[in-house]
Length: 223
Image (cartoon, rainbow, N blue to C red; front, side, top):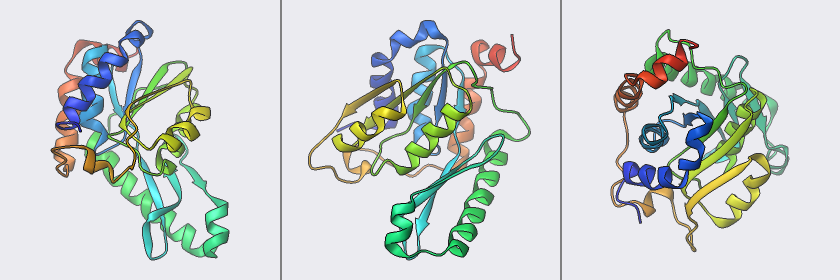
């Protein structure tokens, strides 16, 4: 049981201190991953960026992921064809839902970044962070997008996830640091004492606070 996301981030940071010499970039999934990623970025003296990924939910079952769409120079859409076939989901629905999630990604990008370009991750060590994982479909899409963007090394850092999901994701990364794999696994929020919903303003404030550090600023300018 974690006190809150910040406490989980500080605990993860202690397990990731070996990465500091690699000058990594921390990529947090908003909104919940940002407070966790902030603590890791502070500890590693690393830039904090967001990784915008949205789940494509099944018809009438929005929590069941058919796939995910990930932002980037060219948006990447990953679809679980097995689930699509099992539920007989037609292509029209998938295309419509993908457009809707891309629109939300664009809204969030403008809200969080404005016109500021993201820090390039090609050739760098990337630490992908969220506040927890339930099924792993969204995080899997994010990890593949980071790898496709040319990251030299990918570490997944999460406070809590089911053991089987952690094992299934190992082939997607160079390293996984997961603090807890409880059995039985309930919703991610059940493993936090404080798990308040975050607003866009909370994300923006944390990104700006970290950006004021000289390390992320110099990285962003290409120094």
